[in-house]
Image (cartoon, rainbow, N blue to C red; front, side):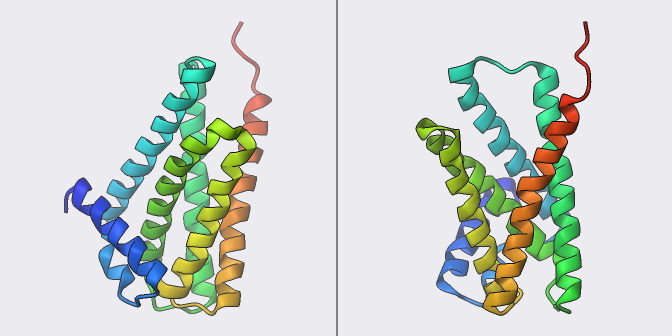
Amino acid sequence: MSPIADLVGAWRGLVLIMSGDADAGKAFNASWPGLAIALGWLVLAVLLGAAVQSMGTGLPRLDQLVAGLLIQAITVAALLWASVIALHFVKSATPALLMFVVIIHLMALAQVIAIPLGVFGPNAQVIAILALVLLIWRSAMVIVPMSAAVAAAFGLLCLLVLVLVPTALYILFLQIPAPA
């Protein structure tokens, strides 16, 4: 599949997830190349968000941009680890790669949704994170399938990873002295 076809499939899958169609997972390219394409869309969304944000605050330094991308990469890796463990814990037959590809596409969507919310202030972007968690919850119910309570716990686990890992890493990066 091409990146555009994967994106169209992801949008179709999102609609199927929201409608509760059990075949929603088939719309996503749950392969290693599909994961690479989804990660590419996520990186593009993050860079687009950084570009829009820099229009009001000025261009970030290259080391800041690289640190931000590194923090996102570590967060994505932690999210993969949490997803694999959660799906193993509930003894799901759904491949972890499928759920992870869905989550990556949803993260890219949340990044894009956060861009116009930035107009209302940085705290308004929390709405995009909460929408992401709700979409992960719904995806877990439809694709895995999990019960509503287990899917809610999975969504909260993803929320913890999405909030705590970047926060901890930003604090860690602040401890690194700036070059003189």
